[in-house]
Image (cartoon, rainbow, N blue to C red; front, side, top):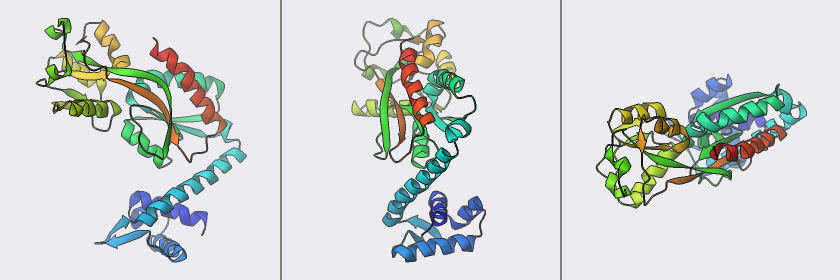
Length: 297
């Protein structure tokens, strides 16, 4: 069993297709098929079931994936360390949209001042996509707000934030003496897309109260949602750090919901089998120190 076998297996696992895996590896499809059969014969298990010309991952295959990912990642990290990767390599960091718009630029500016030759590849996406990228070793670490439940991911709290109710500028409820979650049941909701951590918190909180939420608009763009609220199309719940300027300018209004704070924590997240280089650990220190300054602004 060789590292080459494991890399072939990871490519097939990710694509669930021998031909696509072969193209990704610049190999022929028969060579990929032969390598998978060699692994199955070696361990005496089925890594994939072939049903109706499709590959289906077996339980043994999932276990093998976990070990192969760890072994390949450890080997790659060894190569990086021996070649002074901390100063000449690439550090891959992910960020959720909220933190990518507010915290990430400050952190990267401070970090690059200390590591001018290190390449940084930053990815801004929703929380679900970032967690999958960490599991697939496509990211070294990420900063994500909200719930992290996968047992293969380690997390560390760096700060907290909250979602705030966003109303059209003339909505009289901004002056209401009291406002509860149930009072919003008949509103048109304008929300982030499914997969974002803020959306997950909203869906969970309303479901817990038995209040249905059927968004009129779903968007990856906070600015698009703000514009729709401004035009009176509905209401939203968005991260406070992102909407404070729009609230202060009067572009939209807000009102505290008396029976729900929509508080959430921000995390640094990484794979539990990930070897963190010195530069990755320094970037984590940067996130820790600047996150508290950021949330107190």
